[in-house]
Image (cartoon, rainbow, N blue to C red; front, side, top):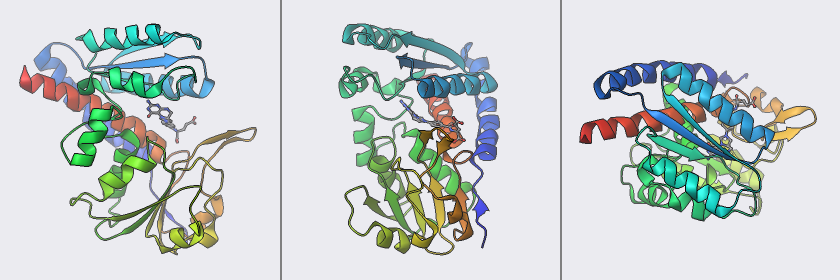
Length: 286
Ligand SMILES: Nc1nc(=O)c2c([nH]1)NC[C@@H]1CN(c3ccc(C(=O)N[C@@H](CCC(=O)O)C(=O)O)cc3)C=[N+]21
């Protein structure tokens, strides 16, 4: 078997076209385009590249970009001033603080200072709480992108056994909350580096979400033939970017979202969707 491609790159391009129409309407009715802010602290080349990609996406769909950059040794006060400024700026519909922050800064304190209505990442504690409660809120971009990709390729979710590998706050922790909603109705097992018998858990699964950041962790012998496999891991090595899924997994999987070209572009598209939805909420309440 050779897996069917879950083409995140092409799907994200479709979504950007859909969003561009909504942005054009919003801009016409409100007199100004939605704006996405990014806060980048330090000069990690990976983070810089991601942020640049987000601004390219914005330009494509007609969303305005507000870039804020601070040096790696920025003080807590400097970061708070930028957050306060974006919270108050009517041109900023939503924004993100690029993670990880330099170690001397308290990530949770920074996230908590954001206006939850402007949280384009869905990572503010209030919005994560709303996700647990099942109340409408901006959703974390990567989990939302994964659900959207599975839906657009008609991968069956109801009753599916999903194995998530990784417990980070951006992917592993929140994705189970989306997939176990009644509307998705999947069953989710959350595995991590402390899991005993990882291969057994993975082999039980109809859908495997690999988000551990451990190169080639998931090998073809671990997979149920025909499973949908999504590679969320990205590790920078001297040979380039490496995912969590071993390349030979494509021989056994039924569907594969590769890295690159799978979940990454979907994450970026969902960030834009969160901003457009926030702008539509504002327009409707104005
Ligand atoms: N506040 C915050 N929100 C984030 O959403 C966030 C973050 N911080 N910190 C870092 C991670 C990582 N992340 C990626 C997004 C897109 C690609 C992406 O588009 N990847 C391309 C290729 C990337 C490349 O070639 O460098 C792909 O997979 O095809 C990758 C990684 C968002 N993150």
